[in-house]
Length: 199
Image (cartoon, rainbow, N blue to C red; front, side):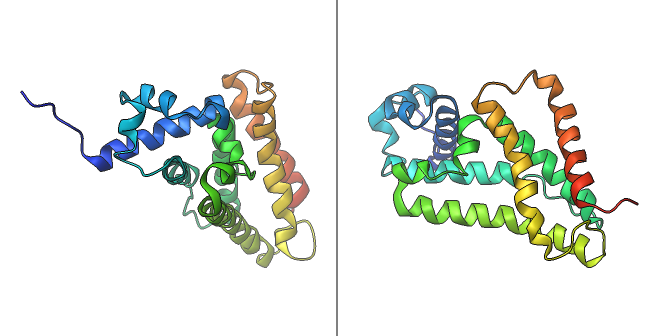
């Protein structure tokens, strides 16, 4: 009986997800085709029937990462509710995606995937900032921000608080998973106290 092979698009997705997990756990030094092949049940050479290069695999993993990163963009009419949901989702994202989630905010993936990764990362970062900035802009237009000037001034504060979860994970100080919600709530309340007018 002939061996049945999975469709290339299904296998490509499996490889991309495995690459994402592998990089998250072991970093770029541990991202080898042999390790990747063992995760998906392929020889390292067979992987290249589905992808032309490791760079192409990294770009496919970025596609998966982007899907996860933007899985929660609520359509609530209240921009504060949208902003809180985005804050919580992004905090869980950088805490839970391991090293790969943190690599999105660095230049390291460019060393593997070159200029194509640079373009993708810039677009991903810009999209991330744009959805947050839009909600901040709506709050500013409604007079709900506690600071004067352009609402975008709060973007680094928002992003910085989210990235504290990545730093904790990198230092393995994230604490128990069951405390994550409480930590997210506490940092969101810090942002809200700094940025949003009471009421």
